[in-house]
Length: 161
Image (cartoon, rainbow, N blue to C red):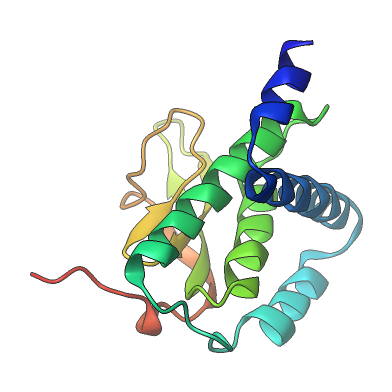
């Protein structure tokens, strides 16, 4: 009952974002589990790799949308009955961001662990920050060697130094 009450307390916009996030998380989970990643990569590069069609006018609007997308994906992953891996969340996040004209790139990387095994992780770089889905909540991806990049980091908004 608590989840239903929380859902009804959301604004209309938050409900729409949450619904979109759940649908995209479902589709990305099914895709990752059933389709060769070569085909998923080809689809993402064909439809979501180009420059954004429409840019958001104000950086505040872009930052608000990025935060709402991140929150919606987290909420969606919490209510769905399966574990949403970082790759599924990143695919869904990239599509949600690019649909709104927000420049973004999906990055996947690997790092070597103490026992000589590899650990893989996927994350999104959008706007001036990283939208990250680490299980420990950290946003430090510098230890990962990037092996895949979908989207163009070159047109992302960089912080002024």
